[in-house]
Length: 84
Image 1 (cartoon, helix red, strand yellow):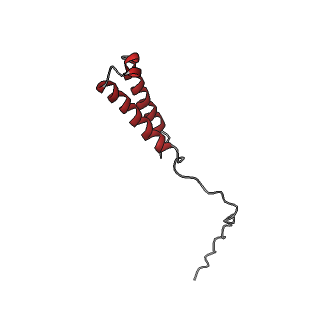
Image 2 (image 1 turned 60 degrees about the vertical axis):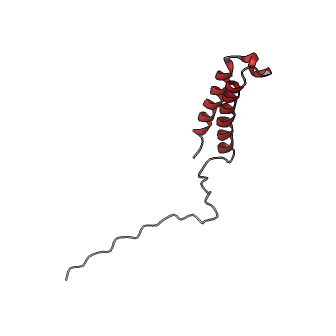
Image 3 (image 1 turned 90 degrees about the vertical axis):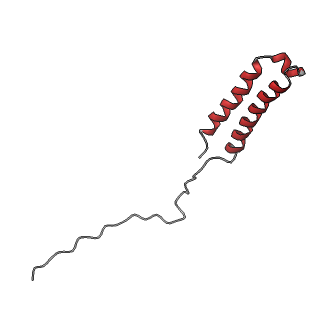
């Protein structure tokens, strides 16, 4: 019968559980509410301008109401890139 040597066992440097730092998975809690708020406010701004174009504040801005609403919606998309 032939002699087969055993391989050396490898040492594993195990850190105690209290020295490990927890990995934070996910996004900050403010991301989702801000994203939804920007989407909704932008949509409501555009809808309000179409419903009442002669309202005191909305009438003064004219076409810029669309720009403002779409900017808010675009900011919602920018914030959504931080959401996990």
